[in-house]
Image (cartoon, rainbow, N blue to C red; front, side, top):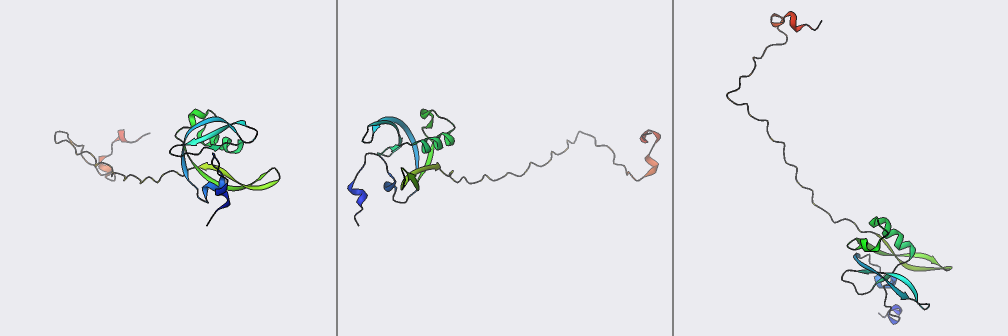
Length: 147
């Protein structure tokens, strides 16, 4: 079935390109390009193994700063993020926009816990102290009484 959004291709990623999916992408780089009818210089986020870049707005840029811990775009490379669409207010209209969030961490199988090692066996050359019965009053001396 034809989609009207296909009639207006864009050099940049737009919400309709996601087709309801929430892809996990890896950041490759940020380049500053002249964008839009006014040819404003804006940051464009590019992903590994993807052709189209995503023009960054302040909301998405701040979220990526929060996720990566850095405002320096060169430090974003290699970070994985999830793209999704959301209805947002833009110049008085509600429109569909791309938003970003942290990608879920891959599931790691827990390592099995090794049992503790057995206690060491006493050496046959070591003499063990004689066991005495703590309830046998005949073995108590004055030195054993603490006062």
